[in-house]
Length: 195
Image 1: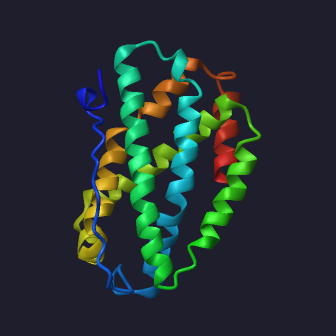
Image 2: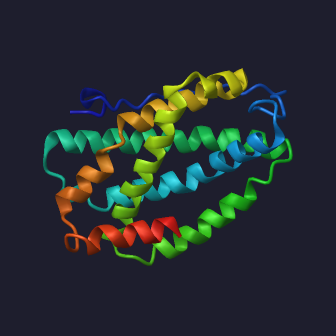
C-alpha cells in the first residue's frame, strides 16, 4: 500500500509565487501578514522534527495500512517543508524577519531532542493536533480565503487540507508503541510542547 491508497497522497505541487508578491498578503494588514509569515517560518524545521519523531518508530509499525499512512504523512510533510521554504524566502526578500522564529524553533527543538523518542512522538502528536485545529479553521470558514491574497491562498489551503488528511497518523503510532503510563506519558508532552 502507498499513502495514496489510504487517503494520504503526496501531491508533488510546485507553487509559483509571483516575483512581485504583495507585501501585505493578509487583509492588507502589516501585523496580520507578519503573523502569517512567522507561522510559515516555523513549518520547515517543525515538520522535519515531526517526520524524524515518527520515522524513529517506523520499524515497529507492522500493520500495512498504518505503514502506508506513515509513508503518506512523511511525504506530505517533506513537501510542505519545501513549499514553505520557498514562501519563507519570498517573505524574507520582502523584509520579514523569518530568521527570528526559525532561531526560536531551532532552540526549542534542541530541548525536545533531549527528551526520549517516545516523548518526541507525543509532542509531535500534540502539535499535529494543534495544526489540524488551525487547518479546520482555515478551511471551515470563508474568512481566511477572503482575507489572504490570491498569491498565497492556494498554498495555505493545500497545506490545511493535507494536515487534515494525516492528522491522526502520529497519534496512531504513539498509541501503537504505548505510553509511559496512563497520565504521565500524556501530560509531560503537553507541558513541554506548550513551553
